[in-house]
Length: 576
Image (cartoon, rainbow, N blue to C red; front, side, top):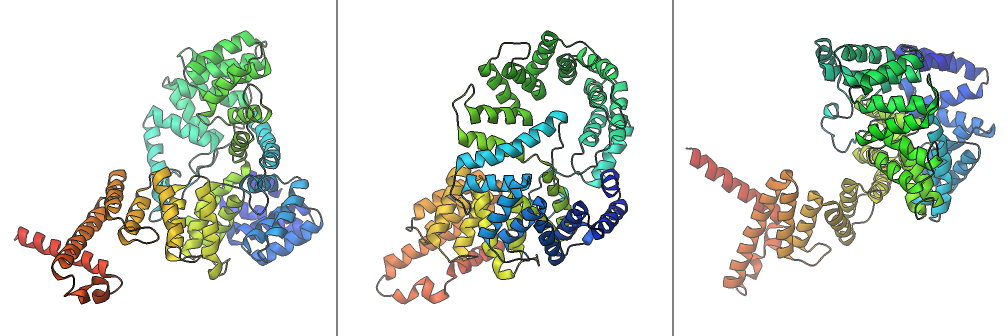
């Protein structure tokens, strides 16, 4: 009953009632209910966070062989949350969890062996772990397309998280509804799509999806007709499965040259749904839809050539179509590409490429839904609940979760870790995110070494990370920081010409850098001019005028202040 209520519930009240039922079942010794309650206590569902109680429950469940509990205890040990920080123990828990069937543990071990985290780096072992999870995800995806989850980067919008484009603001949603009711066909189709799969933070709602698609279809929109066909083909509570109705709407859309409609007809002929199996017709429709750039049709063509369904097996053509579909993020195309690279079928075998592709498929698992709950918890001010969810996703290898966890730890607002552990843990997570290509994280590592956050001050290491971010990612912030270090000779040889060049590059790379670069260059040129005058006229006589000893360590800040004051004075007089 609790599970059914949780799946069908829309309101917080109904979800809370579901957990009351879980609590009763847990009191009676039901292991599944105990797992649900332990998760609720760990992640803070409905304000229930109590990590000590969660650990007690997990430990009793682990003794009963619960792989979910073993995975949770491994995660808590790896961060030292409520338990002793112990990576060796975490690895043991993950190993038992994966042996018991935990997909999360398999994924964590895959990421650890891929990156060499507390284990020897081993691509083949990582491949084995990731493949098991990818097979599980692909099986789910073949039955339904799955729900893509928006991954909000907290680092990009610290001031105003509600303004991001990943999650649809409630006021904007109401405005879209108003436009849809006024007859805006494109908005009707967009709202239908959002409700069909539950995008942008909206609940999946088949009735609303069908309502908007029918309105748009009545106005002659081919995309809406095709989506209605898709709903009837797959079947749901609003549109019961009907091959005849699906065929009707797909045909209406296809007659207008719509790629989704053409692909739908291809699926009907390929699987023999409502029509006899006809691979020739399926191939014809898939080719037409693929030519129009529809990734699902490109994938189906690839699959036909890969499996030899109605055509001769041709791995080169299969690879071509899988690759085309994968460029649009088609998950099954990515999975089959990984299979081809893992086995060397039609392409030179590459363990690393296969693992990276499998990893992308694995990250589509249902556990990615925590990105939304973690984001809303953060937005509502429940920092501990948000952190623990992002931290678990970070442990599974999600780069966005690694940078989000580090960002929260850096703010020192969380209470579930001791303050002295926050910077070292944040540095570790920034490092993992940087290795996965996050430029902002790479700059952060430089900052941590420059200021000595969570590690010893090390200007040379800071300069190295800024250089990587500047050269590889063209980060304006890294260029500016590196210029400052060259200007003052911090960790690297002093070079004013290179400093000027890097300041200019920062301004060219980002418009936001124009003002700081202007002041930095003004200060550099002013100080350089003063030094030249002092050196030329008073080298021996005025040694005591050295700026550092006269004004102090932060003399450059005084110079900037002086320049700003002069500019304000000049501008004020000009207006008068």
